[in-house]
Length: 116
Image (cartoon, rainbow, N blue to C red; front, side):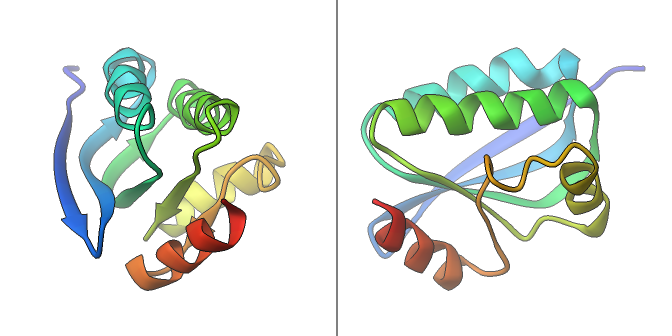
């Protein structure tokens, strides 16, 4: 089974939004982390998870990795539009204190301003 994760970067009110589409798994985690690490070198980032089809443990670890990496740089990542499955996985591993979520771009923007 080929796993694929596509990225589209856009800007909204001065904030970068990375739209993801596909599967976030151990097979796609390295390229995902590389893209996000590069983006958070310079700025905060919203990750739009609305079109993520499937997330494995390796994908969750990648989300945690990019979140920790951004915080180490004084930046923040907010995950927007996560579906119920992803939220249940985060709840199951008790990772809420390590990841920041928002329902909308505007809420994500407000959280970034609040936390940085």
